[in-house]
Length: 174
Length: 159
Image (cartoon, rainbow over the protein chains, first blue to last red):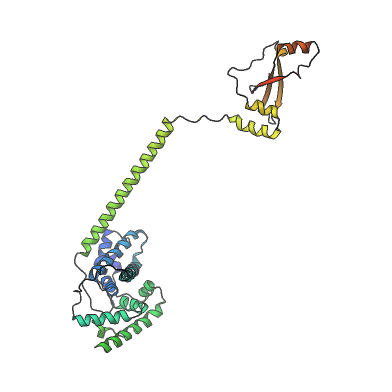
């Protein structure tokens, strides 16, 4: 379940220089993208958010500690994704042309994708954050606690509740 | 609790290609932007410095106030003496006032205490009409009481 952690390989100098940034990107692009995708359900927007999160990190590189860089990056990415969702909601109230793009990312049936999306969207945000960060981000409970700013002990219970809810929802829809 | 049975939910998706190249491009663009901004700030700073120096060199300077003026003002205000006020505001003579031997009959000199040892004012009053001096000599009128016009303060030391 947990992705292999490689801080030591990432940061031999403990400084976020360009080379370290590229190593970090190579390691975290896919998991961060997957988490963000479950927030936005849009390939291009998710890609943009990943890029923006890395750029935000790059701008703060002088104050970044390499031992906590993963939670920091996820927090930035989740904040950016949440902002986009809010903006999208605002757009939906305005008479602007829709920017929905056809979804091609899902390697599965259209119905399956819709069911998964409905189940994930049906989760309360606090549960969704935790389960995505643990299952897709591969973060430890300690790191998730750091990202979401909750006690470490709460992470496990929220993860279990989220998984149970997903099972129930998807079981009903199957 | 395992999430293996929820594989469709947590299926790993591959991000669109070219992400790393785009990130490199963004970093490079940001670097260029910072360099340009630094260049603009440097140019603005240099221009402001040159303008300031030019303004100081080319523009005529305002005449500096006489160092004693401020002290005199304070002192005049403190004493409230209208004669002193008049003296203080009188223009400086173009030529220094010289007291020659034997000119006592035409001048009345009064030492004015300023309250500080380093500054002493002398008030010079000339006797307006020469006839007044004659009259004084005849005992008709005191020299000191003659109508006078204040001339100017003098600060060049005791007579």
